Image (cartoon, rainbow, N blue to C red):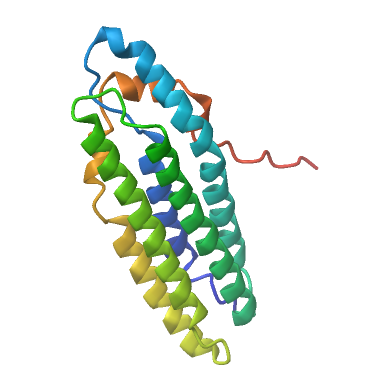
Amino acid sequence: MPIGKCFSKKLSAPLAAGAVVVLALSGCSKGNDDDAKAKDWAGTVCDKVQPQLKAIQSANADITKAAEEKDPAKVQATYESSFDKIAKAYASMGDAVEGAGAPPVDDGKNTQTGAVKELRDTAKAYNEVKTTVEKLDTSDQGDFGEGLKDVAGELEKLSKTGDHALGKLQSGRLGQAMSEQAGCQKPESAPSKEA
């Protein structure tokens, strides 16, 4: 029986949920005069966010494929690599939000600082999950399966962690500006090849 099959839904659902948080970065704009500034800020962030969203999507796809794998060592290697990609993607998104400067919203600097902290904390948490996976014993299928349950539990908690600061970025004209940027839209899955 494939090792990861039992846990693939538990593992991938939190990953997908976490990535969606960044898709809607927005904020309370100070007024109509700031629409151009909002679009500029959105463009700066979204251009850098899109590759990271694609990396997270790719990592999720790898995790889903690993669910069919029977070799614990191969599952472990895939999960390690995937969590590493996700951690780096969140860190890069934090860098993108920080590098864009304070958004043109009320209390923009504090909103930016909080969002950057949450993105970096998420990156750190995925690195910790990766470390947990690295320590799993692959010599015993049963022990490895139990270890995956713990990993799924960690991911479940991670999916529910606070996104208060990012939430402050999820309303107003800046949100509209970002929703219009291709870079902040969810990457499309690769089309399936027809026979």
